[in-house]
Image (cartoon, rainbow, N blue to C red; front, side, top):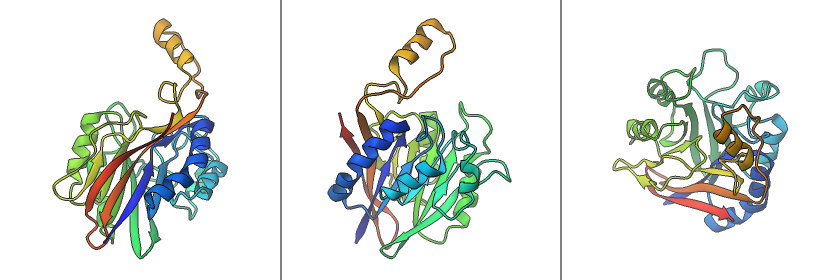
Amino acid sequence: MTYDILFLGDIVGKPGRAIVREALPSLIDTYQPLFVIANGENAAGGVGITPDIADELFGHGIDAITLGNHAFNKREIYAYLEGERPIVRPANMAVGVPGRGLTFVEKGGIRLAVMNLCGRVFLEGYDDPFRCVDLLLQDVDTPHRFIDFHAEATSEKVAFAYHVEGRASVVVGTHTHIQTADERVLPNGTAAITDVGMCGPDGSVIGMDRDIVLGRFRTGLPARFEVGGGPGVISGVVARVQKESGRAEAIERVRFGS
């Protein structure tokens, strides 16, 4: 017997939230996932998340929210991260930072551990994610383990997947907002993909207004980025996991929208 996990890539601003609100019921009907997880670290104006937006996402049927390097861009989220909601920020942060990097959600007799870590290549201020995940996994009492590894470098993401191979059911890469085509199940039963992509405005530059970004690249002058407009697109994955062992059997890319 198996069950499915639907994971939605980084939700970017209002366009990302709108396409999730509109399309998630159809995706749930199509894939019938037991769990729905989403990365929400860009959900508030492209950087960060607020309590109201987190509650909105939970209200759409999302069971757990993961974050990343923009987890604390909105100060009002600090206390929320200390609450009971299943929302996780990167675990490999300084002691005393609000929130946690590990949570559990339970449905249909399956207790799923959800973890979040950040990479260190091109991202500053994080502890060693490889050592940190080893410590996290010591506290997990279920074979059903989902990890969002929020990182920039593809090499670090691939290496991390091999590091947790056989100890995690699914490990997904987030942060770059560009869906990669390397989804696979590793030999010891861990489903992995380097980057899931984003839920955000199509025709943008990784979610940001393309004219502003082009101007920044062409002139080198500072510019305040804004979330792009236009129709939204969903990028995600569906992973199939064995109920008894927690080993993954399959992983499939999902894309919905223009």
